[in-house]
Length: 437
Image (cartoon, rainbow, N blue to C red; front, top):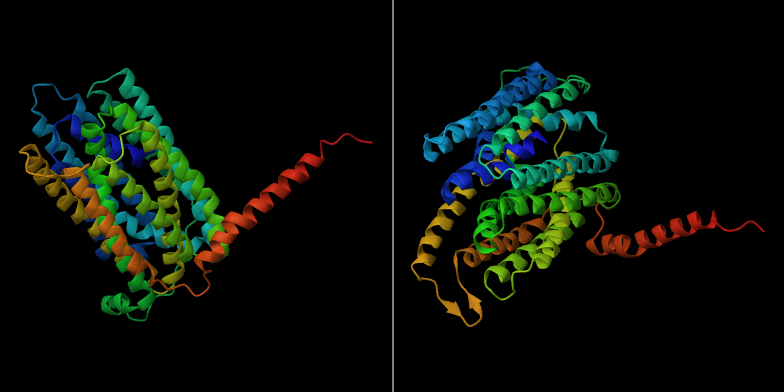
């Protein structure tokens, strides 16, 4: 709940209320991924000090940057909006830096605690909790902004984020500390980064993730301006759509997790990425004017996207947890996180600059139309996003997972076996209500 308020949709809406440009929105989205590069130098300290105390210190420190951000909307109106944007970016930078340092111990901690046979089930429950929290915060934020449409309302939202952050620390302390890993005889040797990058299963996951994230970064920058300017949606409606997406994604993750333990991760990555591509094609034809802007159509393609993203994210995390070796686990996770985060951090800047440039060109009447198709800044950007997603599919086919089923077998399980089992359970339950002869 804390995370979804301070680095989710509400912070982007606040920046947009302050008149932020596409580049500034790109910087806002990019801060947390870019500062993830700090995980590489922090990995040695996480293993030396222990995952639990290292993560606790980082999460405690970052919470107080949220408190500073909660005070910015309360500044008097005489303070220029540009200064408020700069102060928010400064505080978000501190938050992102401490988060980047501490996150290098989190995934190795979980991987060491959770057996491989139930990781899909655990990730399903974990993801369901995350999306449930996002749903609650998005609906609450939407109600507050609808009833109190003022920039000062964001202070209440960011203040709630600080309180949720403090509450989360209490639960984090209850997690058991993992057993210490065996350390090499010479602890002063540097990790073999080049050999780790050349490890084929890991390298293929990392390459696929980087190319996929290039498109995901564009989605994060474009969708809020697209809904605000093209659809004319209010901040309240945008938050409701975010909550709706979280409900679908959370439910899908809960169902997909046990399935991943049975089928493997690769076929679910294929299905999830296909659904995401269909969703972005839907936004592309809407931006091009081929399909009329209907709120029912928006709910429909958000449904497709939410299922796809949930399936994709859970399966990639499960595949990564099963691929990295135990020795040097924190360094492998740090390396993957850094490359992934750099793609998520640098690309929003490029997408934001492209949005500003194409918008200026569009305002000057410089983009032509081809019959019913309209070329504008958003149709061009969504064309780039779809192209990036299609390029990632070529890399997805090269992922390695020995025990995975084929996509056809997974579809048979999902569309034939699972409905039959569900129908059988319903019939067995119904027999309990038959009248006794």
